Length: 299
Image (cartoon, rainbow, N blue to C red; front, side, top):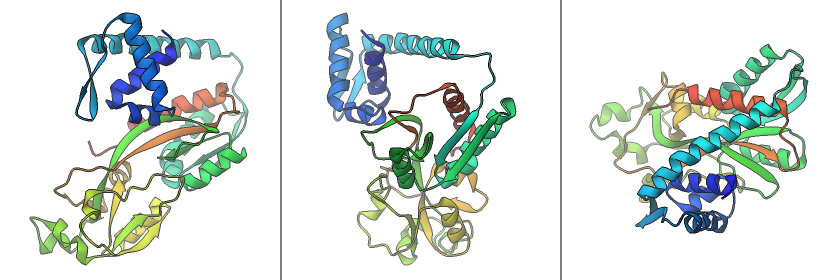
């Protein structure tokens, strides 16, 4: 039994799916499967049972999950304690983040860190996630934070948040007056505002509402702030992530649709595999993780 095997097992228990667990780490699904099998062979108990396309913990699996979470937490605490230093943190760091995350997550976290360690210098680059991936691969950044990046073999990822997307329009959009009971039925009559997909981020356009209708997408964006301004001043509607909708709830209203959303997204910490996580980065990661948990969601 190793800590990595317990991490892979914990991820499988969290997502109830081997491939999704592997994607979140990221690592190959076969490695996660082998880790689970090794633990089952070592303890002599079945840890998961298969239900349709998902896997569910057995009673032994539930107990191992409880113990694994405690052990992994202790290992992380030990790592932080051994990495502590009496010397003030300092250095010049280049950090990239998507536009929304740079403003609402990264900058507040980094300012808090600089308040404690005034010798720190940070260059914050607001850029689309696919640009961020390229910058990290090229070594132009120390680390970054982005939305749902496609895994790259040269990069390391850590998921710090998982959310979902919702359909929204401005609060006084005509659909809410024209059909107060089922405003979603009027969406095909109005243009849509959608995020531009690239090969380096996962597209969120597979929402069920798009499958059976021919929508007119007339505004593409890579900055969520641009999308918000578009929605505030037009009759467009959009598919946006829950964190952004919560942040701009005074301007936006959710359009309830009779479909189960298939569009999940993640916020990932990223760095090049050759870049060692030093004391500054470890502290920055802790600040960012704490901040993301405090950000308002739709609940």
